Length: 337
Image 1 (tube, rainbow, N blue to C red):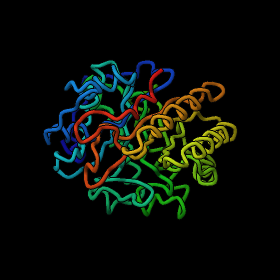
Image 2 (image 1 turned 90 degrees about the vertical axis):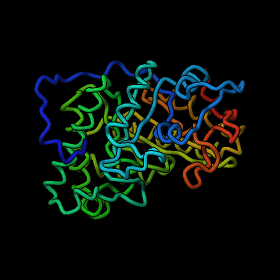
Image 3 (image 1 turned 45 degrees about the vertical axis):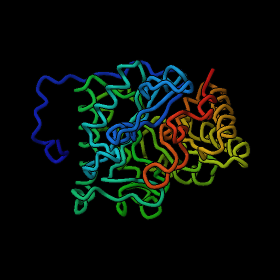
Image 4 (image 1 turned 120 degrees about the vertical axis):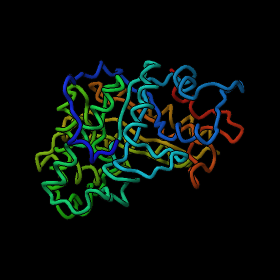
């Protein structure tokens, strides 16, 4: 069902549900490509070459307790590429919840990828006034949450935007142009989520977790403009030669954010080239341990981005953790223990 039909939906009989207690430390993966890959005929094997459900492999073989799922507003119908509508995302979330896994949503507030280089408004929102845009963010965030709950899922965490290094919903919410607008849009998403589940934690997520100046400008700017959110999210995609340095810089930045703003930290995306599996394993183990050991239990977890991807999937993604023979590399062993 399109978001545009939201105002016609009757919510009679719907009751808010709270998120159950999230894990003390989340070890997870973004699995958003899974339904599309399955539609294309992909079938995964474990390290012993036995074909099994990919979510069960992630949970039982690699001790993952959480998943991350992106949601676009009105995406292309190209299901083969895993472009997740709200209903498809809710179905995937239910599948993870049935395995006992916690769920993070990434709300892109776009019909396609939102990242540091592009934060394009959904086509249906393109000509909205700023007040209408705030209302749309609030209502759509609510719609996603109630759609999840209709499937029996209350997400533990929801990202308000994705890698919003320079804000979201450009140009109205471009941080370098109008930080206050960006803050108000974050509040609109935060309030929409909380109106459905006050215990669900909201996240503002930036890339380049090692870049302290970016985070001070963005997160500090949000807070100075009255933005409300619960957790600071970070991405980190180092190379096999600089990962150790980048991890240390990211942990230093995390401690800086905690000291300055008092908010906990979650590493919501990591990845490394599939053809460097030993380095990837060591990187995962190192960042997992150091985030978990952040003082005051303010390091909340680490998520790998789309580990189920095979080499070159979806026009060139090469940071997955499965090989073309559908068996995993050793990279995800870094999550063990």
